[in-house]
Figure (spheres, rainbow, N blue to C red):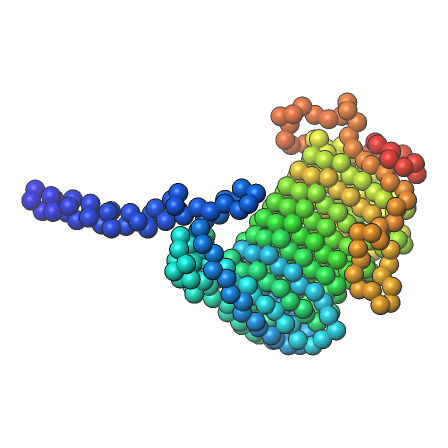
Length: 330
């Protein structure tokens, strides 16, 4: 009995010793931005680490932690990157401690070159990545969250994370994007002749721009939302309502890669963009070809009840009426 009492006292003492750590994210450790967004840590400490590598035709991989990414392709042989490290805490000293716990590890093999970002306290740490890479770099981004923007990178792109919009401009090789929450915008300056592609978000809109005259097979589906085409001519189309959304299969030209577009909750837009000129490597929103705006959505009498969340997608698709009228709703 005496031994049990001492054991109880020891456990109680340990609990009080650990209590400050458990209260790390208490009221005094919460900050708000000007627009009311809450963040852990009232004080942010920031520094920038510059790194450079010659990928030598190897894929470049950016993985780990949260933070934004903005990478631009350029006429150069090295990847010049800036890593903006951010540590937060309830004081300057606490923020500096978090910052010092952020590690940027480089590792290279014959098959790829990787930057891995890690932190002792992930909830209080973030790293933003900025820089320029060789124009034909193959790039893979695999992070926790944060917006991603890739401009004028002509190699294959793979982007995967949980939260944050993804914007790709001037793509010229297969693109694969898989995220949970956020919009996806992808514009091709030239569509590759082969290599199937997937653009997928659970919650968000999809925007795909391809040059007029591109050759591809389209497989688009949303469970809740509309499907819209702008300025594209299809040789074949099939459309079927699904839940409060739709599935759309179409052919641009003859053959070509399959472009698979998937969103659970959001709308899909397919549009024509003007081909890039000889001295231009990016395609802007203003380059959208405005003709032939067609909106596809379930008719009011085909939308299921609000509590319907699943539908049979194996039923034969219904042919889309042949029409070129603008703003036509199916």
